[in-house]
Image (cartoon, rainbow, N blue to C red; front, side, top):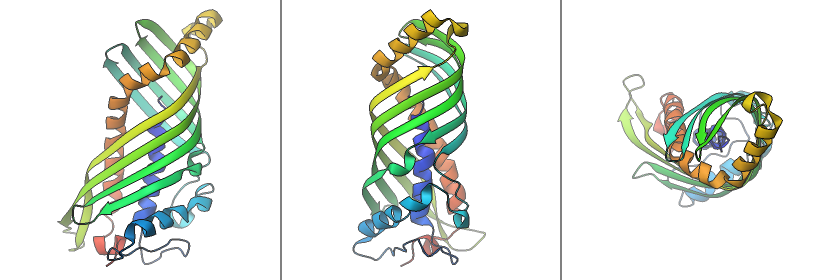
Length: 252
């Protein structure tokens, strides 16, 4: 279920694309104006128009290739209910993010809020992991290669912000005050190599146990995971928005 964290790296790229309106705007970006009566549809088209560019990256926007998407590290330290896990994932590589289907975009300019709904058919992940703890009272420990397949993923993102006067540009800017994420994964299949110091019998039994009980495990880890990821992308978003005024990002 740790793959859920990486979905947000991809979501942040999408969200940044919606907002970019610089003077050196690449020709493949569709400009949307906040007074457009069909603004939501315009933003949706703007995101969809970038789909073919995401695989190889967009150097003009300093966006790296998204197939595969590389994430340096994710750390989870969770001790709630039947799950008590400390795990670190490094050298993370994700395939399938650019196959997203954007279901809806809704922007509330007066209240500085944006809501996105997406569907991702499938994500595949490879990473190095180091883990120790207990799941449903079952001890688990190991380090090695982690592989995961995740399908039928519904994602909801709500970004709440506020406007402020920048002392640097003396213009009105936007900053994120809350970044809410909700994930609904339809099915997951996970395999962790080298569990229990390479004991094949225990390792196979634990991998079978994890896949049989993935929904229970996910339900316990999900709140802390979503909160952690939300804080990460709140910080990333504000670094981006601090560079451009509101009129530049979303002109009248």
